[in-house]
Image (cartoon, rainbow, N blue to C red; front, side):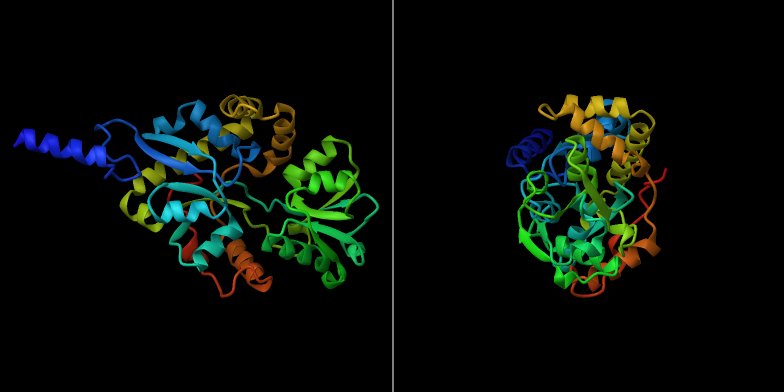
Amino acid sequence: MKWVAALLAAVLAVSGVTACGGGGAEPGAPRSATLVLDFTPNAAHSGIYLALERGLYRDAGVGLDVRQPGTSSDAPKLLAAGRADLAIFDIHDLGIARERGFPLVGVMPIVQRPLASVIAQAAVRRPRDLAGRTVGVTGLPSDDAVLDSVVAGDGGDPGAVHRVTIGFNAVSSLAAGKVDAATGFWNAEGVALRERQVPVRIFRVDRYGAPPYPELVLCASTATLRDDPALVRGVVRATSRGYRAAVADPAAALDALVSAVPGLDRADQAAQLRALRPILSPAPFDFGVLRAWANWDLRHGLLSRPLVPRDTFSNRFGASD
């Protein structure tokens, strides 16, 4: 019977019939988990890479494998299918995924404020001055919501803005003077333009009508939360420790990031990390803010029906521990 049991275990292992979250690990060994990022690794992920370098996930009993995304639509499918344990989402993408039936829950804010903004040439003194001017957008629905909110929040008419799709070329388009403004992240495109000494004005969306929602959110499927809450709790707590360490020692966080991801420009990431540092300290979800965010997304057409924050976000896995 022992021989039969061993043979069956070997067949199952070869067939890949194991759970994503560390099935088959020896007792006491770290349980494996896969985390899919929202974008190419950058300064916003520095706390994760510092936690990896310092063994904080291992200390929490987790062997974490961090992966870059294929496309923005991959992560919901990977989590729902059990092919990844956790993923980082833009908060709007999380709301849209929930609306489309993906059973996902946010378990930790990664950054504490919106990153979206409208970045304008220096001649544009305020958002309402964009009436009659050309603004570049990527083509994502959230860009129109950001642009509408920023212009309307300054008393302007969003309908009077001429929009052109430029993809993810805000930096080159603004530097070349091809557009009067463009949507982009103030911590990425905004920092890059200022580092290149391109004179711009940055209008952050939460200063013009949007609530101070957390832009990036760590998420898991409801199945993972039900079946392996200890794994999620270990990842959340180690990630929180990593971000607290990154805020306390940004030089160490930068070292961990550029060492783990060859090809990153150290100077660019250092500038981004300086900009992000004030909003990287771990904190629990604020459900008052999340209700305001859900209403803002609904009002701007990113969601088609009301979202219930208590069903979509959870603080019970220790983000502030």
